[in-house]
Length: 401
Ligand SMILES: Cc1ncc(COP(=O)(O)O)c(C=O)c1O
Image (cartoon, rainbow, N blue to C red; front, side, top):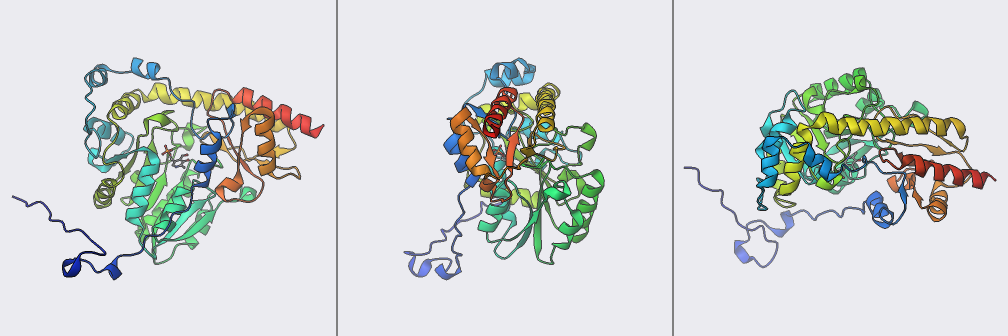
């Protein structure tokens, strides 16, 4: 019989001679910076009329989802008991998530409360003091800030508008160092809509595999490629140390479930993430697990709806950008967001405030990502985009006089 692991508190004071670890050996925790974008949304998201900068897809109606239940998930829903769930998640949910990948079985999947918890756990586990990490930027703040707060030395791999926001794989490879412990790439990319080509992706993942550097591949917008042929091999299928990050919030249009996951062939890493998660949520919400399972089993309908919303809105946006000279964009290749630039001699921060007051329409200025250059994130996953955009355009016309 294997005895349970014993435990003694790692106390820093009050433990007298029996304290198992000297206070001097416990690292001072680093402070994590405020998440600027989330604070911005906390202020505005539920008080404006139109979110023209949301990164998710119009929330899926609960009753429509229940209509998609098969016999098994319908029974799981009807008989659900609201107790704790398995900490790695319901085995059926892990099995369904594993179906999204070629080289992952259900034990290679760990479920979290959204992608955000997965990022927090993974970066805290994979990055230690002094470890070098390369992260695409501008981007979702936690992808670099959690790594920094964990003690990592972060190199931002900046995407540039003049390059069409493309991932410059050779430049990224040149940034790698002998002490690089992790590379983090988000594609389809928030906020630019960048999507590497298959050749670029293979070049990067082959190089990382050769150098034995793990990749956190943030694929939360996967399945929203505007041309399906651009869908990339998931990070976890590319090589043994690739880690795919997925979520129900974006392409699956179910942010309210707060269900995300990591999928990887690296069992040791996943095990360490599971141990870390014991300090965050322990296990997922029982109703959300069943609803996520229903949605994943009916993914053709669910994803088809999301892609239709995105494609229809893109057409509306194409007309808008053809007409305007005061805003311009690099048309995104994938996902529900793009990153246009205001070409007027006005700051996008000021314009955002004016637009909220005049029309109740919200943009996300690049300053909330720490990025200068008068860009703003534009989201086109929501059903009210035509109306929100019409209000934005009327506002721009009035301003132009
Ligand atoms: C690139 C990226 N990764 C992760 C997340 C976090 O997803 P969630 O809010 O579902 O946890 C987001 C959310 O906007 C995102 O844009």
